[in-house]
Length: 121
Image 1 (cartoon, helix red, strand yellow):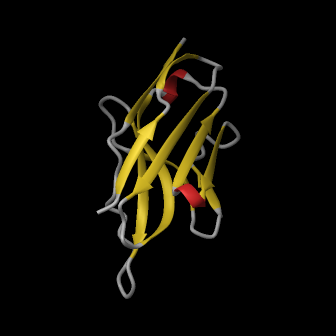
Image 2: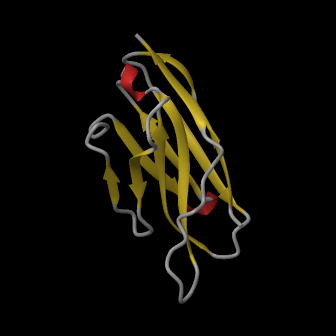
């Protein structure tokens, strides 16, 4: 089972920046897509950004132009650079990875413990 350790959350004023990190370890299988989701209080978890195994990226419309996802393959680590943060970005941010097992569908049920991001006005 892959372990995911997130870091980098915190409290920031609107317009500020934060950088989240997520390191994956312990998997016997290849790590495929790596991405971020978030869940605000009282709301459902929602997609934020993902980087596919080949490097293609996709972002939620709400964060396009403000957030950037990057990946260090050697370290099995992804980053989420969040700029021009807004109060509506306040949420717990979760790392999610897809584990590739030969002959099976990609296993996306791999989540980090979450890191709180709070943006004050």
